[in-house]
Amino acid sequence: MDQDHLKNAKNATRRVGRLRSLGIVTVGAAALVAGITAYKQQDQLFRTFVMPAVRLLPAETSHQLAVLACKYRLCPVSQYHDDQNLHTPFFGRMLSNPIGIAAGFDKNAEAVDGLQDLGFGFIEVGTVTPAAQEGNPKPRVFRLSDDRAIINRYGFNSEGHQAVLQRLRLLRKKENFNGVVGVNLGRNKTTMSPIADYVQGVRVFGPVADYLVINVSSPNTKGLRDMQSKEKLRELLEQVNDTKNSLDKNKNVPILLKLSPDLSLDDMRDIVWVIKRKKSRVDGLIVSNTTVSRENIGNNKLAEETGGLSGLPLKARSTEMIAQMYQLTDGKIPIIGVGGVASGYDAYEKIEAGASYVQLYTALVYEGPALVDDIKAELSALITRLGHTNVADVVGTNSKFYLPNK
Image (cartoon, rainbow, N blue to C red; front, side):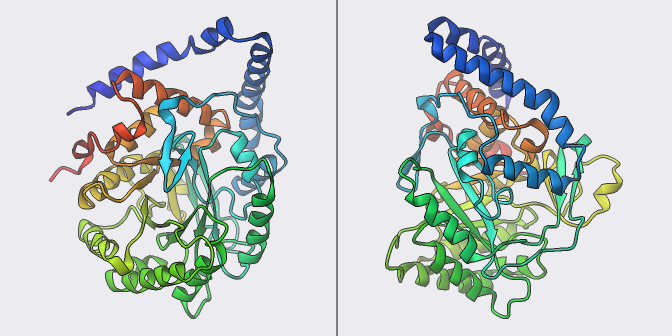
């Protein structure tokens, strides 16, 4: 199957999308109309003034301001009602939509309420390390605006387990909070026992998280990616699972493994061998983390900066790798697809390649908070237009198309 079906549906969907708000106006009550109008005005304010102004600031300063805005709930609140076809099972929970915020934005679980206001179906906080650490020296974040990309070498800057744990406990006590929150776990830079750091993360956050992520794929901590090797990964995941099984509460917390896009096919085969073993199994995969490759970017001096590249240049590789892992696992291990998602069309590609859920982050830097609703609306319309009932119907349906040419 080629991509004509998706491209044609995309074009038709966007024509219909322009009439969407009109349809709501004609059938909605006056209060709803007023609310949507107010939101659209706020949305336009963000797109026209706020986002361009924020991008004039240093990249890390902009990031900090965005976290503060979400923390104090100053961002626009989603007015999009998630369509039924976006509702998606998620490890025993039901998401209203399959679009999540990737780890790296809210590193210390400060902004979960505000991120939920934006319309995300699930939220991943972190990466969190056992002890607080500052990360790498500044500057450590760089925008490649012409490429719609970011290079970061944060290096797991984190307030540590206890600070994040306290915030999540307070969040769980709120009567009106029912969000799905995952915790991305990392190791301290100077640790003498990397495996012990992950084990501690499982023990600390297992009782309060909806899922846990074992992050051994960031390029910004020396030696971290070596833990993706066959024997090291087997040992790590065996101890992670032993710890999970020993928890007094929430023994069934899902364990996900986040992978690098720079793995070879043989590396991926080794990983699949590990995660199919009963003692070292995982419940899901996140494909993918940032890349050290500088392919698909223009002539930009900032490309020489060390760190992980995210955004549009990563899109094709991450989608390709989703398809590879989907095929290697026979579609039996759920995948969260991340890398270059900036539209409902991009999300649909990830899903038909084999992802059950999708995360984004970098595109928010360039498009602003209204992007979340835009993605959901376009994804929902594509699902319907292409003859599917829901997200699950789409997963992996065109996986072989995205495999690399031999």
